Length: 179
Image: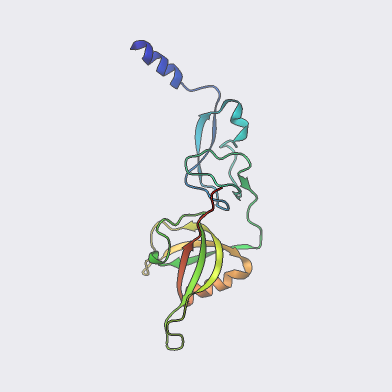
């Protein structure tokens, strides 16, 4: 028994070839901003395939990485082009997916507020396949709305803002295709 304890302690000792790399803190779909935490691992000859945690992760995910997995080199591409804008939308929690997180892809729909000129107007698609950059963890303000930051083409920003101020905004989750 003592021998097994010694062997176990020897196997669990810190290794000289342990490196600090990035591990996905959440599922990171294509297009997501990388959310990661450093983790010490012994990768041996595979260490070169993973960026060191001493190097900041910048850009967007080029390949999907599941929560808890190590982020490989090449998984992150260049940052969004300059013609993109981040627009914050107030969204009632009942009009967004329950598990909405940064990195999700959503269709943004708007329904005009009911008034005497447009009773029961149908919803319209404002922006298809938009990237969610951030989601508030708690509803804010008197309205109880979530603050959802959507990355949009610069020319769509005014349409998103107008939609959020003149009616109800709904976010419809676009499922990722797994390869």
